[in-house]
View (tube, rainbow, N blue to C red):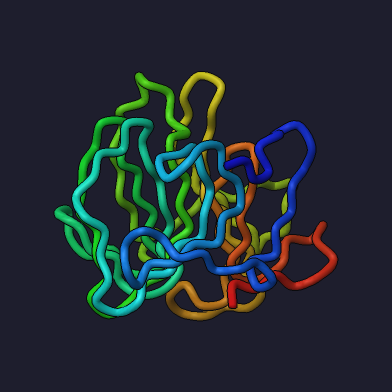
Length: 194
């Protein structure tokens, strides 16, 4: 399967207009943003887990990183609530579930083989994110990692001051960008997950 497989041009996908596609695991649906391969693929996807759904134990040969958009995403490492960013390096294994339901933004098989850093960060609890003098003061960006030829960060554009992660735009950045809530200045219309 090939979806937005040419990474040369900019690709924009509006999740609200994309079709949910059933996965082999009951109660788990995906909105595929890019994909190269079959069921095991290099992919960027929004995945929705119905309450009580789960994936069987599996290994991520090329690694996995995800951001929990809503709900609690549970695996052997614990419960990852909305606003949590997780990196599982190549060779990592887990059996994820969502007892109460969850939606995640996930990137699969996009790690270098020698990039073995594991990470779990509750972005709602992170204080003191660095600012960039060239950007508006409501913009914050946390650089999570940098490997040869790759960098990853999570950015927040606050429309107003609120507690928790409400009102933030969030994204995983590695050549492409995901926007959950809010709109970066250069975008002309609001993007929505629902």
